[in-house]
Amino acid sequence: MKLNDLAAKPQLKELLIDDKDIVEEYGEELQFFVHDRLTIEQYTQLASLNKTDMGAMFHAMKDLILDDEGLPVMTDGNVLPMDVMNAAMVKVTESLGK
Image (cartoon, rainbow, N blue to C red):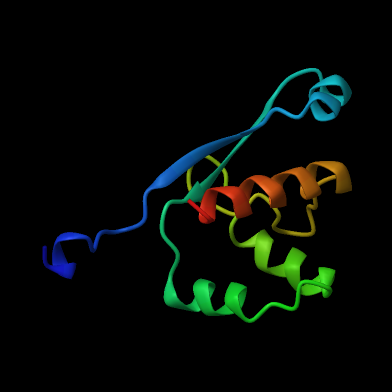
């Protein structure tokens, strides 16, 4: 198989935050989207992150946590509650690891 056969534009992939504590707190599962592929810039940014630098981790995640139109959820000063942010980070890293 040629690598050209695998190259494609990123597509949106739905993720659900269905953790028991989150569902209890917010009354339902929380839906968001990620791209199924990363740009080389995103990949290198994530690969170079220091796992103890939570600020850099959150900064990287803001470009990965998207709405159903593929736009970042956290823009114009809007941020997620910390429990939701942590759960979303877990879901994103699980998704990227597959």
